[in-house]
Image (cartoon, rainbow, N blue to C red; front, top):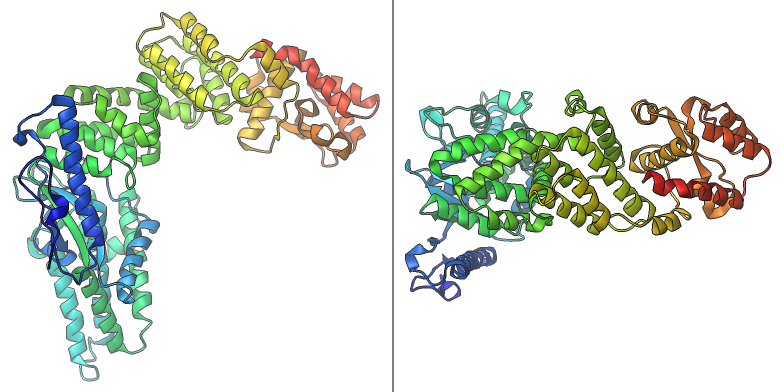
Length: 639
């Protein structure tokens, strides 16, 4: 036995953490985790001193002594429940693969033990351990144990039942012992309390849909293993079951004799329950548990910022308000398909609209520094709830159909769709701030048009980086949100002053502007948009039907006037591109006479003018430059 107490002597009192570990155990991970816990205590103390000065010892968060458990003992000694405010089971193939690889190291004898990480819990009034951090590991562990039991039962049924006279009954007993041991760990049979409840009902509701499915899956019900499910967490659980089942069977079937296969299965089971270790921190209060969780995970290595932010918000609500707050959060996240990446992007965009742009890595800290009590948490959730539908419209303005009618002003929707096709998202905070402040749709359209001008000059033509634009759009949005701007004219003036590139530098950059184009995606739509706007202003080609003809119906295709070697790098210059009706695009467009012939048939006056030029002679680099120069004056007029 080794005493590591010298590593964990806290600076703020006479208490100390002591971790007693068997020398035979690979304890480096456990030591690291306990050091991390000590750092949590130190961090909390330092932050508290910074904010409040020296205060009494009992004002600090009570960091309990961590306990080390084997997996088997962990479940035997505790009843775990996943509170309603926790995220659902989300492990996919990669995480399950990592889990198996760690166990396989033990099976192959490469290591004698494995540290499976920490869990943070709070023991509630019913003596249940509410899981604040670690439910993914505990859920996977329970499913894996069920896999072991089900395989042992199947082998027994296939090889022993009805063959008692010809087989080794002792081996059959080994299989039944494995099954009974798993059932004892998982528990829940004959009306007992399961060792893990993944969807904790209130007011006596013990079998909510996810919990009912999880219970069936881990208690041997075939319909849960094989049936069709639509719920994402149920799919994840079912997939994890089958992935682990396949891994175990592949390993067991490497043995040729039945007795060796049974021994291998028993070894896998014993290595998991006896040689997988977890450090468990059971906090004395719910608030302490939340604080420990946040500090352990605030660097965001394992969780998305949205997951930690949710935890922070729920920690502020208290027992009386947490149910309503969780329901509101669920309503918000349902609109984002409960996708952690989308939720994080949404919260980050909202934060940029009200305060400032921050990186995803710093988002949680920014939120937790400002949202510190129940009223601020409610306001935060209210704002998210009011803006989430708008955010989904900004992501995809035309689909589903309800998005296309979100704004009564079709002009707003169309301009947002053009931005969406070009994969422009930096402007979201401005529209969100205007929507929050109840600007009219006409004002929003005016500002969106200015946003397009700023973006086209800054990014599309001059090709400056996005950092200045992202920060600038956030600053504009913050001034809108805080009512620093008195109206739409002030917003436009602010954008002109801070973000709009000058006419001179825009025209210079346009004179050498080159675009690759493409058959689909942002490159295609960016070039299509540039050319259609230039044709509208230069030739009066579209009138008010530009969006309907070019974007809604997608009638036109990008065409290079010449891709001959003689024009060299000028092949991709704007002056060498046009848009032509799709029914006029021919396969043999390398022939300049053929190009001119089809351009002459176009309804666009710009193409007809171009056809006349081509019919007069060859298309050279000088022709491309002259055509591009002819558009230069229009560029600053349009944008």
